[in-house]
Length: 629
Ligand code: COA
Ligand code: AMP
Image (cartoon, rainbow, N blue to C red):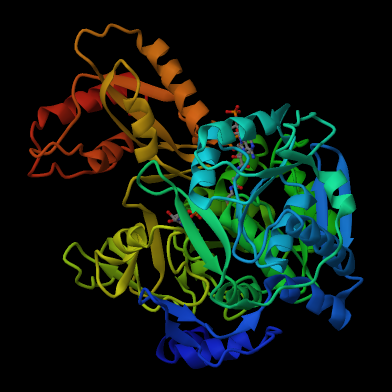
């Protein structure tokens, strides 16, 4: 069938479509109700299905001929370590770790925070939670203690799993002091923390609360899979919203398993038994979906890579790993390829390895700019596929669906909507816009399986943030258009969220931090284009009357403040002092216009502006700072 036929079927007959896809999985009890509503009136898939995600991802394969096939390959250039796990070995280790977690009093529905680097135990811990029906919440290692504390307070975990350190280029990041500080700051105090001691750093142990990973594991008995309902949560993953408080995206078990399995072939053109490599981090949604769950649910081998695209040890890292393990696909953020391009513009490292195994390069996480697309296509010599998705959906919303129909690429476009996603571009008044008109990218309800049904502990925020603005539609937060051929162009966020090196961050949160500084009366933080990271935050600060501070000194203090509250990944490096900020007559800072000016884009002076001359001043300041030419 053609893409168009499959897509139409998914929109016109969603229940038949997804019932059919659900059959690919080994349910304990196949769902009778394919699409229903929950108590909040939200669409839910497969609600009466009974299952266990870890059973589907591991035990089922062990019982059906994949016991000796590799499930997980760990490759860590930063520690010079390589390990391989067959499906049987991974199942056994997950079963024992599930026993260890259960022995801490964790049971179905309890939360477990996993604050760990890219080591196999992180993956094993996630699957072990799934095995006993506990809800995991993985926190990315680049976050500071405060961010971890916010997540602890929101998720209220019965248990925290962590390690002594992560390893960045040329430095060891000690996790334990960050964990201790987070528990100190948090109001909710986890009873138990289990700490994995890595040889690169020794963590101090707090008696009565902390336990040693290996000692505790050694005493644990393997445990079986607990039956869960399809609508029960599998995990909570926090993502940046427009305020300082991150949103706990809830993922269910059933819908998630179905779309993970379906997408492996539909989107990525992968077959069971093949090796798939998502060069992301388990702290992000890409890591959850395509390092851990999807490849295993589909019977593939997945790669866990503890390294960077460059400097570990060189710009050939991606090609070395792909060729060594015969990966069929590499999936990474455009930033990773821009980093490689900067070091190896001629692609000399590509030719040092035999990458004949690779069929396709996939990119997502931020806009794939046409120059990076063209460089990668030419130098790697493989089809480069852009695809658009979000933490909220957990899988691709629009892409060039390699297992359905390979379509002509249009640089700058994520190609066509994925089956199940009914994309509409809406204008300010909620009307559907014509082809090529820019507007809000929305998804007509119901969304397909896998997408979030709520925000953890805050359903009103889910309604307010996504569903209230245009009744009947989910507002993605991205702006863009669909062209005459139906290609989707995602042009960027229309809210206070930015993407720095493929990491999603809230400028609103940064503003809250900058605004707390005793010298700052008012501030605006927004994204400015960056050659390597796509965009980076820039702060404009208006000082309090009478304050006399050197701009470099203030800039450094604010940099350190954001670093200590959000973490180094915020990449907040620069603040410019301004005399006034452009505002509407009602006092709202014109952030969008600021962003457009800094990007050198055309902009319309809003009729509601209070003082148009303030825009000229900003332009002047940006020119003096070398941000605008
Ligand atoms: N733990 C602790 N610190 C981390 C971290 C982690 N897991 N990940 C990043 N950091 C730190 C970095 O060490 C750096 O600290 P520094 O300011 O002290 O040098 C800071 O956060 C910024 O990191 P990053 O933006 O990643 O910049 P970088 O210069 O270290 O690396 C790239 C540049 C391009 C190599 C890197 O950004 C990259 O690999 N990007 C791909 C992104 C990606 O895969 N995203 C996943 C979404 S699909
Ligand atoms: P995250 O939730 O961290 O995955 O970030 C999701 C956001 O990243 C989206 O809302 C987009 O703004 C951006 N994004 C992800 N993939 C793409 C893409 N292929 N093209 C453009 N923007 C993208």
